[in-house]
Amino acid sequence: MSSFFLGRRAFIGKSGLLLSGAAVAMLAGRDALAKPATKSAEADVAILNAALGAELEAVAAYQVGAESGLLQKPVLDLAVTFQGHHKAHADLLAGVIRKLGGDPVAAKAKYAFPTETLKKQEDVLRFAAGLEKGAVSAYVGAVPKFSDRELARAAASILGDEAMHWAILRQAVGEVPVPAAFVG
View: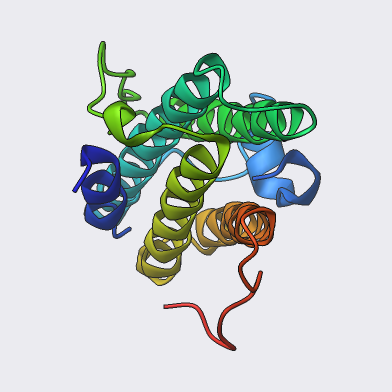
């Protein structure tokens, strides 16, 4: 199993249009929330850093897909769009972590992706769909763990974006876009 799946699952712990007012204010440098110095705030920063690590890994994974030469237009354009969403998520998370007094994690120099199994466009799409499914599960686990409900709300917004990515990728490979009534 790739480190990406493990990283997403270990993260127990958006798209910019759905950010809460507090999250937008935090990124703009205004104190929407008092700078926390509590254990619960430290826990929130840990969850945010796990999410940031996973988002940075997603950016790298989409780069591998884009550079593979296996994606045809308009699928390549879609992959680059999704990569942009993950970059936006990462930027948001890093900004909030800094605002809360934490140090954002950095992207790894190298990720262990199963590139040897990517032989055709469908392989890349299935790989990406698996990553997005892992992201959905990770955010589902994270949302209730935040002490700060505004952070939970921002994470839920990212969760919605990840779920849309997963559904679109499933449909692109001929699978039912929404396989069940509940996501777990």
